[in-house]
Length: 88
Image (cartoon, rainbow, N blue to C red; front, top):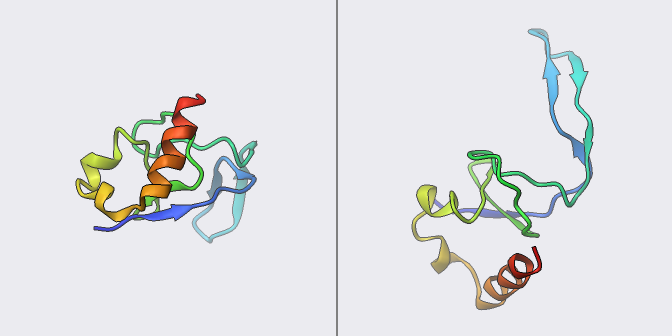
């Protein structure tokens, strides 16, 4: 399985739909800096954020889902992520 990179934008935290596909409820707005792992709910301070199968993953969950993820990124992206993690 491969992963993609997602550049988050301002978006609703959740949207609830009824059975007919109509929007029933929209959650509070998340900023582009508010990104959470879809598996463990940890904050993901990476931009771009790693995404597998439509799910954003933190660096602890990513190897559980995609063990060979490091071979899929460039040295520059690895350096960018290390810098972002160090500033947290």
